[in-house]
Amino acid sequence: MNVGCVPSKAMIRATEAVHHANAAASKFAGVEASGAVVDWTQLVRQKDDLVASLRQAKYADLLPAYNNIAYIEGQATLTPDGVEVDGQLISARKVIIATGARPAMPAIPGIIDVPYLTSTTVLELEELPKSLLVLGAGYIGVELAQTLARAGVEVTLVFRSRVLPEAEPEISVALEAYLAEEGVKIASGVSYEAIRQVGGRIDLDVEQAGSPVTLTAESVLITTGRTANVEGLGLDQLGIETTSNGGIKVDDQLRTTRLGFYAAGDVTGRDQFVYMAAYGAKLAAQNALNGDSRTYNNRAMPAVVFSDPQVGSVGLTEAQAQAAGHQVRTSLITLDHVPRAIAARNTRGLIKLVADGQSRKLLGAHILAPEGADSIQTAALAIRCGLTIDDLAETIFPYLTTVEGLKLAAQTFDKDVSKLSCCAG
Image (cartoon, rainbow, N blue to C red):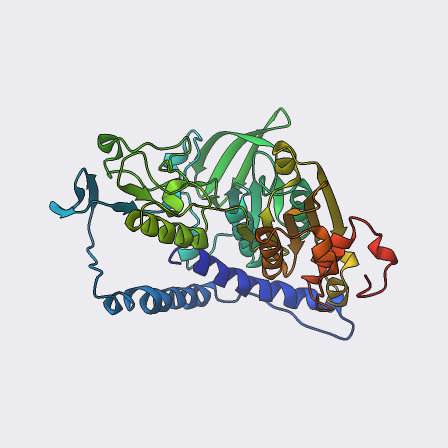
């Protein structure tokens, strides 16, 4: 809320309005419109005001309403008997660690000597650089690269493998093309060699397709991942283990490797979304107080990338379903088969469904669409409730909505939707 979701989405929406104003004339006859970011500083301050108001209303002001919560601010260290804060021992038989995560730095020679930006600090800038290297094409890198390009920055997106490496390959390929169409320069398949500051610019040496290449920009933004905030907690002294990615190791009840100590949220290094942190914290608290009766379940966890088009995913990808031993069937439709997209004159995107070929149960849904974020929850409910692709295909969906594309994609398993009239089954 403070440094991630709310700040970035506020700025994403602002530059999205600019982009769609500029694109309107090419889509709709008789329309003239244009947009531009004329004062980035005002946008940043408006965003800061929003964050501050939400922090006060949804967090600080709520604490006094709970007379059994004591809020203590300070540096904490875990002890066998509880938590020590600035020399004061707070005795507790059960402890939940929820210290979150921060941007991680890649192991590039010279990185510590370069004035790099992170996903936090870049949204604090009141003046934007003219050019920017964005390292990493995960969801944070993609969102910020597109946002800043739409604000007028010359952006180069640099990454090792592909855009959104955990997404379905079809989505990665399509979204990369859309970013390039908007003017984002793409430097894919690189290995990082060195980075340095030269006068007023940043030089990044990479190897690409077997050849050395130097990429140059005024600034560099690091979006290559996040690392858990575990330093100084005293994990080693208590025998609390961490995973290969640095997160605190927990089981399905969110118990750490020390009895009575639990961990939840980004500090565990998995499912790093604010709603999953809230879910995990609730579950950890219930287990700590009620005999470890709750089990963490992310089978129907929706994930959203607020790019444009948006990416919404839930459940298994095709590769994951195959690895899990399913007899996999997939369907894929492009948005030029979805009436909502046709009417809006924005057919960028696709919908891919993954199903078990024997049971016909829906295993995964992956949407790339301008309104994909608001459509994925239908698929999440379908997976949670064990629905089949037939259940989706036979469900009544409202016409001229993006979510109707799920019905069309479900029908595509057995029919050619291009030969169906609107709303036909």
